[in-house]
Length: 71
Image 1 (spheres, rainbow, N blue to C red):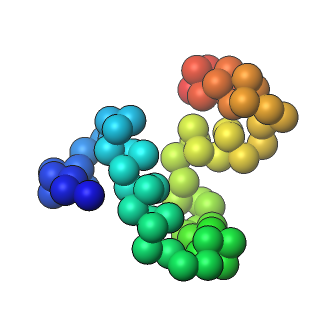
Image 2: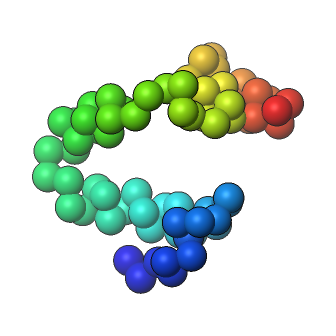
């Protein structure tokens, strides 16, 4: 994956690196469905940024974009 260590401290992850993280997660996860459930339940939703929470309540992708743009 070769991501720079500085990505941990950054506020924004560039799209290419964001997809590289998820691709590596997919390749190493084995049972993808079980890992997604584990990942989704590993963090308290109170710690999520508001942009992430907005996507959970969106009706569709367009609604996600509108909600994120309005934050």
